Image (cartoon, helix red, strand yellow):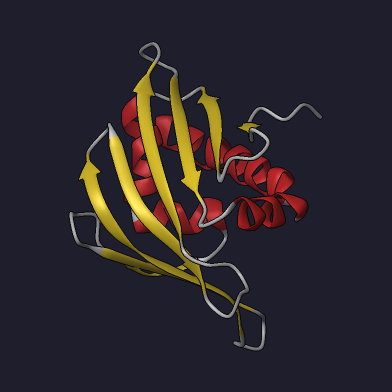
Length: 156
């Protein structure tokens, strides 16, 4: 299966750029990042907090069937411009990765299509390369595929 989500990681740089075009109007693509109920559906995680405003914060948690937390992540929202841009930090709980900075830009292509461009900046080239050595590309592509499916249902 072709990966629709593209990841550009230049050698020797501490960032990567992720791009994905969606068959969704811009406002619906943005809602997938803005509304906790939709985020939970496509990310498959519980949204504990999602304050979409400058100096807001967010926290996500995933638990196993016994209720044990198996994944947690949190961060601070630095900029939030509806249908345009989100700048935030991302930090995983109990993981060997330092905080990263994410720049999400949303762009209208046509009335029915839109594009997401994410630039993720890591503390070092080594941290970025360690992240890429995980099944990161497959994971983000799967998440974006789920986002497309979940939000498609909102179009009707």
